[in-house]
Amino acid sequence: MTETERKILTKLVTEPPKFNEPMRHHTTLRVGGPADALVTVHTLDELRKVVQFACEKDLPILVLGEGSNLIVRDGGIRGIVLRLSGELTKINFDTREIEVGGGTYLPHLIVKAAQRGLGGLECCTGVPGTVGGALISNAGTAEEFIGDKVKRVTLLTRDGELKVVERDELKFGYRHSNLRDLGLVVVSVVMNLNHDEPKAIMERIHRRWRYRWETQPVNMPCAGCIFKNPPGERAGRLLDAAGLKGVRIGDAQVSPIHANFIVNMGNATAKDVLALADLMKRTVLEKFGVNLEYEVQIVGEDG
Ligand SMILES: Cc1cc2nc3c(=O)[nH]c(=O)nc-3n(C[C@H](O)[C@H](O)[C@H](O)COP(=O)(O)OP(=O)(O)OC[C@H]3O[C@@H](n4cnc5c(N)ncnc54)[C@H](O)[C@@H]3O)c2cc1C
Image (cartoon, rainbow, N blue to C red; front, side):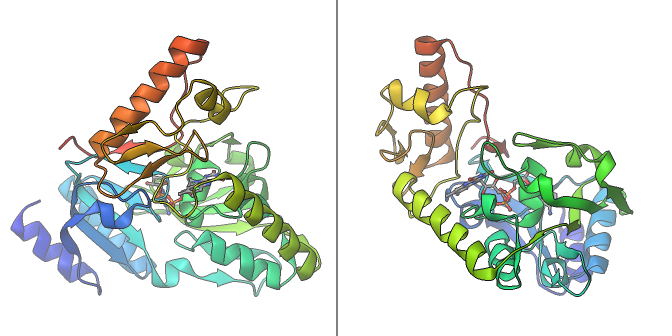
């Protein structure tokens, strides 16, 4: 990115962009080299201006949520990393339907909705991402997904146009949606939630939380499950049966609690994490003939 581009970018937004910002500060696994520019937009107007500018200058854009499904390589990210804040994180309970900004922190939405007697998002309890990030990969469990609750999505396209997409055009599958084919940024979503007693919803949330604390390394830096479950199987079970729990490369370790999680023991690099993930994938292929597919998204350049 040129000096002139940096100056123009700085004038488009109220919060000063961060240049050469280490992505390890913005991913839950705590790895990743520098982004050319990390730009936080607080309004739709700022978002449009930045996207239109990037389009004019042919600068790549990566939309960042909480970085909880990302492995950013050690060479970092060229172009703009875009983060949604302010009015793009609002929850509107005023209408019969709920409208939620794409940058909204999902755990916050789940609890706020529960307090108003609106359930149906319990499958996403403990998913530490934003609503936009969750929609992109159709977050949830192996059986229930956030996509089940979506009525309409507003996207911003690469050329800065707003586009409203109705349910019948949306496709959600296991850790998959067609949103990336339809636009660049999930700006907001309208959801249909179920009416229920707040206490009953909170109980379901607590139960799921307890289960997570018992079965996943939730207090360690990680990026959730590294691999998707193959049809009719659990990736974690195969990785465990292959004897991979506790295996370590540098400071990246296969969690001794759940074999489908890689945890950062302190100073892991993306190179360590990716070498370990590759070893996990190869071992399962050799032992069981199953070719695991990545659930995490791997982005950026090699160091
Ligand atoms: C401890 C732990 C437990 C987890 N458990 C689960 C689980 O049970 N189920 C599950 O499905 N996942 C789980 N995850 C993975 C992760 O939290 C989810 O995939 C989450 O939805 C990612 O959201 P994010 O905001 O962090 O997205 P990011 O990781 O920041 O980004 C992921 C992708 O979404 C895109 N993106 C993000 N926001 C937007 C937007 N507004 N518009 C367009 N694109 C966008 C990014 O460009 C990127 O391609 C877990 C992760 C951790 C660390």
